[in-house]
Amino acid sequence: MKTTYQKKLLSLFTLLFAVLSLMFLSNCKGHVEIHEIQDSISSCSAPYVVYFYSDAEHRTRDLEYTWDFGDGTTSHDKEPIHIYEKDGIYQVNLKIKQYKVEDSKTIALYLTEDSTQTYADWDYAIATDELWAPAKVEFQNYSKFATSYLWVFDDGDSSIVNNPVHVYEEPGTYHTALNAMCSGDTSTYTMDMIIKDSPNNILIDKVTIWMPNTDIGHDIKLEIWYRGFREYKSSWISEAASFPITFQVQEKLFYFNGNYNSDLLEFMVFVDSDAAPEVRFYLRSDNIIDDFYPSVLPFDDGYGRSLEALVGYQD
Image (tube, rainbow, N blue to C red; front, side):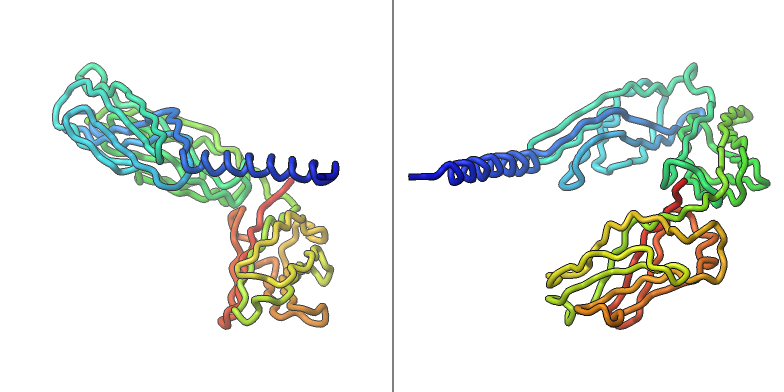
C-alpha cells in the first residue's frame, strides 16, 4: 500500500512529466507571429529597388520564409531586395513557416506617380537601453523613394552610407539628421541623440571560460579581483562535464570609481584547489576606456585556456 509521501511524490512526477511533455510538443509545433512588414524604396521613378524586412515573433530554428512580391516573382530570403520595373500597386505577401505552424501578412505597396514623393525616415539600434559615451550606434534607414543619402551626426562627422555605424565620443545632445534625395527633391528627418556621460559603475555581467580537456571531471571556480581586492567568488563547479562554463556574475566593480588608470582587473580560474589559480587573465583599467558597452573582453593563453567577460555600464 502506498504511503502519503509516495502518493505526493508520484503526483509531483506526473505533473512534471506533463509540463515537460507540453514544452516538448510546443517546441515541435513551433511558433510564428508576423507583426509588421517594412520596406525601404530606392528611386522616385521606375525601376524601384525595394528592401523588405519583417517584424516577427518566432523561435530561431527551422524557419521558412516565402515572399510573394505581387508581380509574379517570389523569394525565400529573410530580408530580400526586389526590383519593380513598372509603376503599379502591388500586393506583397510574406509567409513564415516553422514546423506545422505558419503566419502570413499582406501589405499594399504603392509605386505610382502620385505616391513617390521622397521622404526620410530612420531609427537606430544600440546594445543597451541607454547611450553612454563612447556610444556606438547602428543607424537604420527606412526612407522611401530616394537614390542618395546624407547623414549629419551633429558632431562634425557625416556619412553617405545607407545604414551607417557611428560612434559619439563625447556626451551631449546631438541633432542627428538624415537627408534623403532623389531627382532634386530632398526630405529631411531629424532626431535628438542624447549621449550620457560614462557612469562610475562597471558591471561584470557574465564570464565564460574554456579549459583543456584534461580539466574535464575536475572542480572549477572563478574569482574576479580589482585593485587587489576580490570582487567576486563563484561556488565550485563540481566535476565539470564539459567546457565552456558560463558564470552569471552580475557584480559591479565595487572599488572602481570611474578613474581609468593602471589598476588591474583580474580573472582567476582555479582547478580543484584554492592554493593558486590554474590560469590568470588581467588587464589595466585604462585599456578599456575606449570600449563600447556592453563589450566582450577576450583572453587566450594559447594553451587551450581562454575566457570571455561581458562588461557593461550601470548607473
